Image (spheres, rainbow, N blue to C red):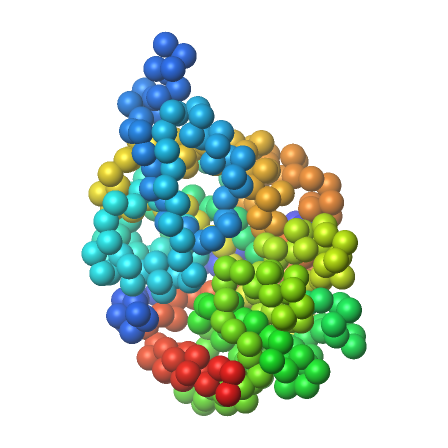
Length: 373
């Protein structure tokens, strides 16, 4: 994992001002021992339910079972495919959720719109294990509304045996998609991640709001759209496994599972040479959470070093927890697709809040309408 380079990078991010662009414009268009176990930090009685709204397959089942056992409660787990879906549901008045895991740049807008509870960090003592590099960043300078979950990159996952050579760049991704991989390419259903591809391909910032640059990105996406099999944030690993897909614009999460099976051991992941997105997902508590004590217990539990290490070993995303990192499986810790090298980090760019830019939204909707021809 990057050491000093990552630290310097995050210091720059910490200095960014919080964007106040119209965050909700995006959402509007996107559509005894037992008694002690039942108490959280500070002795509060824990409710019998916890409702989590999250990305799919993003929590280790063993950790869910352990938490339910410790506190004699039931976790209900609903999923969303992208941040826009999460925001749209909250904007639509959804209630009953306790915990969610938005990507970090969405946190300021969620705070501004009154969707999040301010956290009492005295009830989450395990935040002491969070690496200081991941604290005080622009999306929550005072660390009052989120707890870092994990981080990763957006890149190219592929089946080596199905391609003539490994893709190493966004240019390769485009050429393969229009050529030998046509009709066998999947992209995650996430506007911010997909726009990384054409913008970095053209040498622009992935946060660009420049009209001409976005128009260039639009042309790239419309050019590739007929060759795309599907947008899928949840099951793209299944399409790779069945060989329905040979290449995915996605995340590292499914990689270990694919590599661990003989039939899909040729699966690999590349961080494009032109650069890509550094993202961080965060744990937040939804405003007026119906089970706040259970929610606080979860936020503290998930940062226990052994529990957090099990999360990284399960979901294949890098932990922000310094003590947990010591317990991560050596093969995962050594994998540069999960814990990027200093050289890789030098080419990464963090996301800003671009959610209020209508041109981006229009490009995304037009692109989706053209997929598959």
